[in-house]
Amino acid sequence: YSPEEDTPAARMPDQIPEEIKQERLDRLMTMQSAISLKRNQARIGTVEKVLVTDVAPGGKALGRSHREAPETDGEIVFARKGKPVPEIGTFVNVKITQADTYDLMGEML
Image (cartoon, rainbow, N blue to C red; front, side):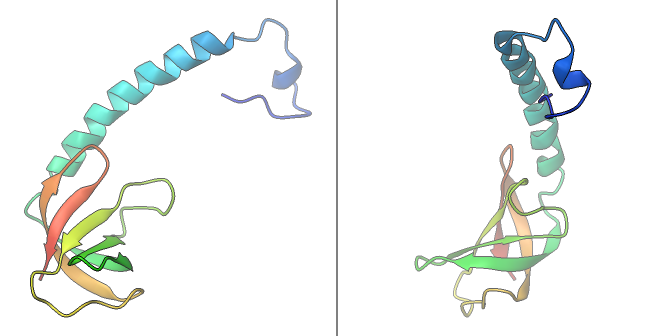
């Protein structure tokens, strides 16, 4: 919760102290990270259509499927394994091979 300027809630007395807000956020993020990891692990073995967003010189590239929103969700990091370098802005198929809490790893097909 963040008080929005010029709203009744922002002017209400007895606002919750910042320490309590942070404690609640920390508890929520701990629960959410477990959910996120479980959902990402369920995607291992799937093939995703990935929009290429960046290409690193060392053989890796970054992208997002239709499930990852820019700036709010994780990314898919994938190896090219001898495949031609994909152009940024193109779609490639990636087999998901690993998952962590927020990001997925895979191999370009």
